[in-house]
Image (cartoon, rainbow, N blue to C red; front, side):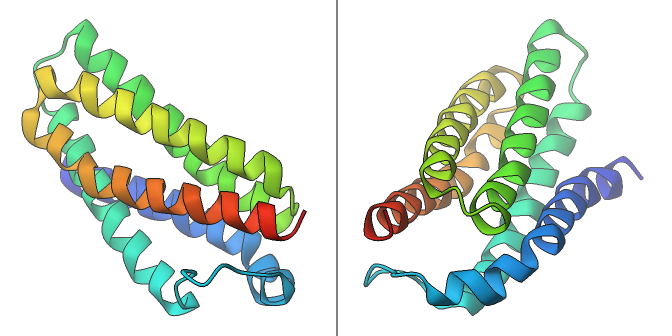
Length: 152
């Protein structure tokens, strides 16, 4: 049951964020200038679904670890990164604040990196599972910055 809860938390938060910002994706995003490396829209849904599932599994590994201050720190960082992840879609797609969205996603990348670093002593596997997420958010940061630059 704990595993199911851990998998559902990021999926639900990502889905809710997507729901709240869907109109911006469909209308506004289609009209802005995009860099040549902008992936097709259909790529984002499957990638984020896999990342949310991996994120949930890594959270499960942390949750089932021996209670400690290190584990509590990681849980706090997990909540922080998930909050930042949620907010990026709203900032970018709903409110169209591209500069702020770029700053926010760079902050998210650093929080994910810190979380992975802090995860390692608690669960090395959970830490390594953050690598695809970190790489994707790194790419998304470059994309976000490029979108801001092209549409300033």
